[in-house]
Length: 329
Ligand code: NAP
Image 1 (cartoon, rainbow, N blue to C red):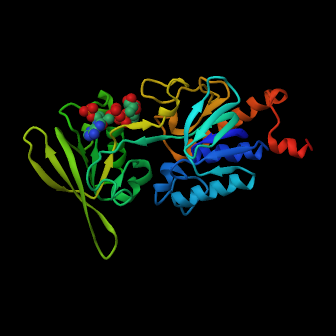
Image 2: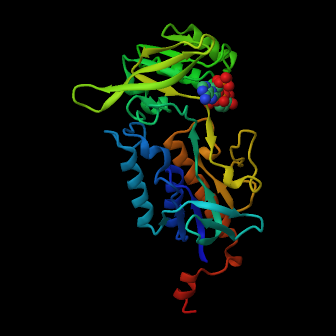
Image 3: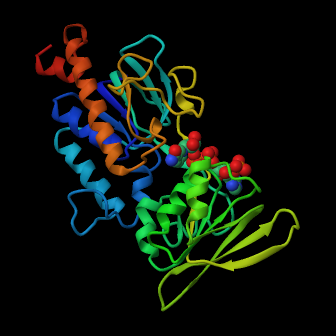
């Protein structure tokens, strides 16, 4: 079994920042990358709102730089997913990966995020980054003067629809029912906005696109279905922003760590979960801000808490193999 002082589950901005801090604090650190190094941000083509990049950067470049910075201080990256954890006996904690390897770690930082829910319709995945988006803050700017479609009827959909009117010529909110789920205050603001229109009792069945000027295919229309009449029709649009909820990736921790009613992880102001020595950062607990920079800030806080927590227990921590070798044992 491999032993580490800190195990970080997840490799988005929260996990990569946490790794930088714990490795730089001379703590042996392993990052379990999961399916995709960088998580959601690595699928974002242009990142213009991460401070320090006056000309912007790309998701993959940002992630690679953050990884290299953590590696420089000794963080190890394991390109596997954690499939099982045992927090029941306290620290050291046990973690199993999909390769069958078992690790033990004196502290754990959980940063495996949340995924925006998908509609699961034809064209949706194909046009992500080319007209389909799940983040208005990230991508709204690219739709200046365009006709935008927003899918959903909750707070996120209306809040983001209002935000998108800063850029778009028009914003059409498509909701599957007659009644919006969003709060009255947001409904009043959205309905008062002259750029926003609503299409009720309607589902989006398909996203369609085509290539123009020799470039890659981009979104040109959505196929809609009136659920009352069953009639389907095509509506031209330049962008489809989907806000139908988020699913935190917390299934691995059910029964072991306290989750709220929407399955987000419960943490205290020190990023500590319900298990002492296990910390969480980023979208796994944050259903509100969901930004790369807020996740990075969270990762820093969780790492500082883990560093302090380990320092307070230094006397009782078993030496790691590497420390034993260094000490000539
Ligand atoms: P949400 O409240 O769960 O709303 C999701 C919306 O998407 C609902 O209108 C739902 O329709 C629709 N939907 C779900 N699955 C769909 C599908 N397959 N096809 C079409 N439509 C679908 O999610 P949210 O808006 O992301 O909000 C999440 C939480 O964050 C909420 O508690 C919310 O209050 C909070 N939040 C608050 C603010 C704020 O206070 N300013 C801003 C954002 C989020 P139905 O209504 O028919 O179920």
